Length: 220
Image 1 (cartoon, rainbow, N blue to C red):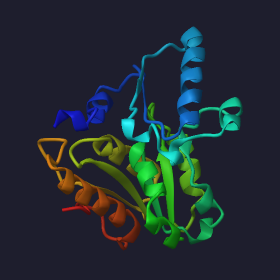
Image 2: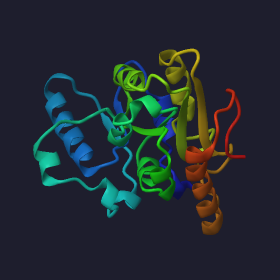
Image 3: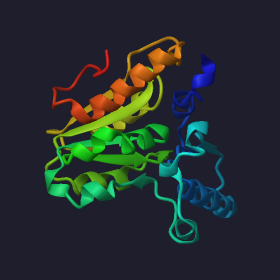
Image 4: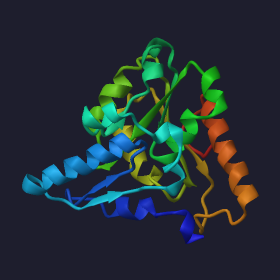
């Protein structure tokens, strides 16, 4: 079961006092620019770099980048949803995610039919990109819900790390909640069919659940 998780939560539990960087890139360009940034920082701001790199993204077209994306630009700690930005006044739910689950959401069939949802990718988890997130969330003035989506069980992954930090930067009128697998002692479902059913439920809930009050997990 341990093979199914890099135990992101353990790295985030140890993240404090500016001791290292923890990232989860969703595209090859982001990965490339992060490595360049790390090399540059070795001269004046050296810190270890922990990167989550799932094999599932190696051949995924949605995680690929153009050559121009590598030769231009820089690493973005938070990647906004350009499709949603063109429709910012209609966004009601901001879905925050990182790494592989972001690509799963962007490629899901339900995305084309949901004009009120923005999918925002948090690529740098620690140090926490509070200013970048504040700016992006402010661009969706009518959003009433911020949902963290992860494929790990609720007691694993980044949720315990993200929740208090998100509450500190969002308006008190906005609900902050999570969509994940239920709490478990093992990171793996143990059966492929069960894993796929749970994964599809997580993706469907990210697009279809109505607004709800804080507290509790969506996937039970």
